Amino acid sequence: MSEIRVRFAPSPTGQLHVGSLRTALYNYLFAKKYDGTFILRIEDTDQNRLVPGAVESLIRMLDTIGIHHDEGVFIENGVLAQKGGYGPYAQSERLPTYREYAQKLIASEKAYYCFCSVSRLAALREEQNKNKLAPKYDKYCLGLSHEEIEERLAENEPYVIRLNVDENHGDIVFDDLVRGEVTIHARDIDDQVLMKSDGFPTYHLAVVVDDYLMHISHVIRGEEWISSTPKHILLHEALEFPLPKFAHIPLLLNPDKSKLSKRQGDVAVEDYLSKGYLKEALVNFVALLGWNPGAGSTQEIFTLDELVEKFDLSSVHKAGAVFDLKKLDWMNTEYIKKLALDDLYERGLPFLSEKEFFKEWVGRQNMLSEEEKMAFVKRVLKIEQDRLTKLSDIGENNPFFFASDIAYEKTLLNWKQNTVIQTKEALESAQETLSSLTDADWEYKEVVEKILMDKAGDKKGDFLWPLRVALTGAQHSPSPFDVAWVLGKEESLERLKSALQKLS
RNA sequence: GGCCCUAUCGUCUAUCGGCUAGGACACCAGGUUCUCAUCCUGGUAAGAGGGGUUCGACUCCCCUUAGGGCUACCA
Image (cartoon, rainbow, N blue to C red; front, top):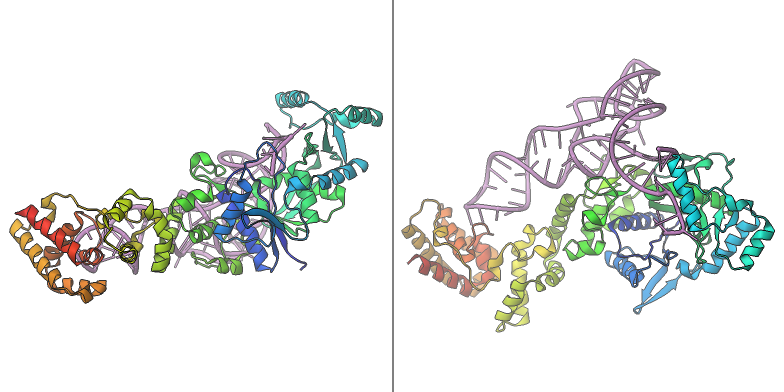
């Protein structure tokens, strides 16, 4: 096989969309699997929709996620730079190239000048719509004489250049790597605008010219492009370019099965990261939307390297896939559980630092060193790790770790039908036990656990429930020995003391 | 409206003519357990409908239906 060269070619109109992330990912996986080249090209031909900073944000996000490109537009030392032998890689910098090819098409009569006003086009469309016909340009300007065209050009009349689709061209058939054979009749294809009146090319011209000049071997893009592919094929023929292979991947869908959109939830990768989803989980999840290793495999969790190894365009699904948050949550939970504690701390701290309760806690701990604070947070994390869905959940469900005082009804201290006397005895016994623990005992949560469990004996509920409530003030929480281990001897005894005061 | 694409549990999917239709998420039940979470076990739940082809169709073909995409001097 000749060299594999694929591209991800976003328009800088906003943040990276999760659908685009998947398109980029599939291109990346395909390239890496076959030792090919993954190119990032910027399709900024629509001057009206450009969003300042969007190029930078797209590049940074791909970089953050770990989908690295080999060629194209990069950020170096904070500024945009381009690398590769087929640049420039931003279409707005390639205008002369597009003009040159447009002129070639004019010369070979595969394209023609069109001076029709937007109002005439609108009227035409309306008329066709009324008669239930497909809206298509009527080739009106194809009938213009050379003299008239020259004259109107000389007068600087605005014009566009349109593809001259031969209605007698046979059916256009292409072999899609995902869908198989796709057939479209030439008569259904509109005389697409190739050059706009502002001198910029449309997507259709730019993509064909660039894919050719950049030696793109496989065009892997979203299903929404499938109906423009015949136009692109016609352009390849007119320009005598060899055809790349096409693969149209299924759309990502809203729960109501429409194309994934902002109206029905978050669509930006940035949104998910800032909500506390791990990039690894997001990549894994999105990879499985429309693809799976097949062959009876039941594997759900994949590293990027495993995806590279196992990815295959032929096992990409044809039907669209609903973006199911519930499964993403599960996957994120799995990834969080597997994180090393130090890694969890590093990734989780930014989220924790934003919380009011944490800021207040930090304010109250001015006698602690940074190391001691870090050690405390790591203990919290060790207990919470298995109970987190998102990084932003840290501390949320267990406020007693960071709270200065915990409020609860004293009746909550009673285990089942136990009397106040029994509860008091349990708390006093716990007080005694915890007081007897040495600093060395407090080092390991397993030691604290063993000592308390031994003390509880076969009456676990009678002993552990009051202790747990005294330490947490909560009906639901992690085990009392875990909480005690996090809080430490002094704070634990303090909370036991105030629980006993409540009862007296 | 026209053109194109698609169709297995609620969701993501396996199956490439032999199926008692498998897995995962979600949900439900049970177990472990001081509560919660984790963990373990089990369960509910699917081939849109109709025609063909075939000894045999979820798998191949056709029609219908449904959903989606496109239908711009946007990508």
